Image 1: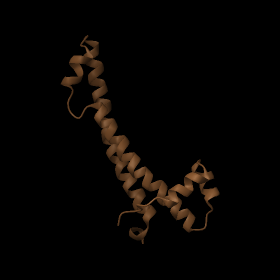
Image 2: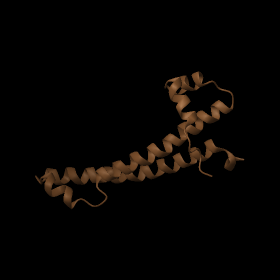
Image 3: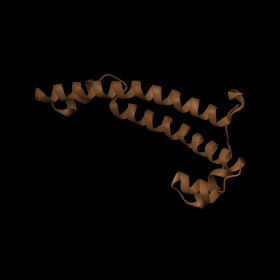
Image 4: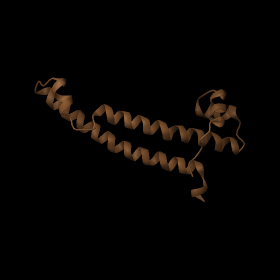
Length: 116
């Protein structure tokens, strides 16, 4: 039953964040083109940036990073817990994740698992 699978729920949330990021990235690329066009006419950034539509590129980048950091942490934590519950050692999980055993131990101890 997928609804009862914490890792599949975390991955579904990651999928949704990636979809939102695709839209943010599309908007960022549009804004980059607009800035380049204004710079080509000689406008200074002090004139371009205040006139830029909101949210600014820097705001979009922050939103993207925060959203991905949040769901990424939950995916890492949930995946580590799932693998450990299925009998995989912390050493092996660390090797798969490319981190230390201590980091995996920390992930396994972290509170705040999957929201129900």
